[in-house]
Length: 365
Ligand SMILES: *[C@@H]1O[C@H](CO)[C@@H](O)[C@H](O)[C@H]1NC(C)=O
Ligand SMILES: *[C@@H]1O[C@H](CO)[C@@H](O)[C@H](O)[C@H]1NC(C)=O
Image (tube, rainbow, N blue to C red; front, side, top):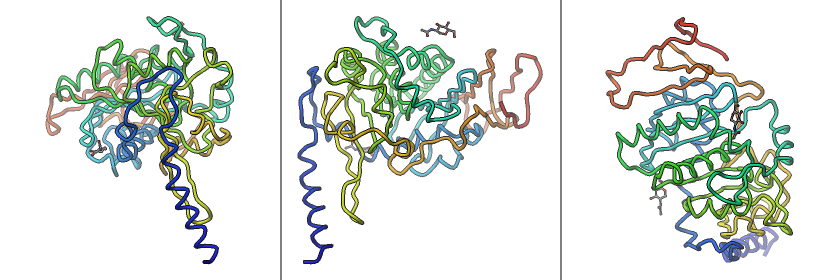
């Protein structure tokens, strides 16, 4: 047998062997074990990663009408209900209804600051400095918490969900986000369950940082058991803020269930493994088994581009004249569709900005 043949055999052996290591290991905190194959749906992950990518679109008109270059494909037929831009804090999110899966989808954008490198470096120093309300000993980082709880995003998202559920009934809710958007998505999912009493809430994040300590993680997974935290190869962000395994109660601690995407193989025989990790949140055989040293791996998930078209500004582009829109007093933008009307009869709702002048044309903020 030639060398190539042997390589193939080795690759096959690797492939057969690897699944045995999946889902092994009991959690430190006694999280309930479930059939791993039921909780991670590869098809769904491929759909949701496209939603998480689309939120980086700056042209709000294209996003609102779901005609952006990242819209369509596996997300065809999606109807945007609301886009929220918090201009002051440079945050963006949208809410809408998807035909498959039949669900309300809430998506948060990652950081749009000057440099992703700076943002990542800052992650090293984030403190566990806020007690999660109503949960003794559960500590989180206040910046992640506030980005969702203390901005325009939360009230607008909650209103959009309520509005949509009134119309579409009790459909499941899926919260999605990449990077910092994953951190916000996590707080949103928890908020929907704990503070809004909603059921059927699912969370899937891509390359999110750690957001709280071990007590918070165990609380989190109890409240939002349908959670998948996707990590990719050497993506640095899931390694931050740091976890110290010899000091597990005092440091940041991920919640489960991680699914670690990484390639295995030799030469031209490369296979993507979607490794379902254990229920500890910090499975040493998943992304923690490699060093987190890649920004590149942070910006691509399942082959989908997860970064903004351009960095450095909080630019918003939209054609005000064709959109129903609303601008609140803090200068934030909320585009909202009137769900009760049929498409054909919906009229743009033109509102006045705070100076009382009508805004029109394409604007850059
Ligand atoms: C996985 O998700 C896809 C897309 O929503 C869905 O069609 C399929 O039924 C799901 N599979 C399972 C086993 O739930
Ligand atoms: C919320 O924002 C306000 C104003 O920006 C700030 O004063 C307050 O400390 C923030 N609260 C939290 C919990 O971060």
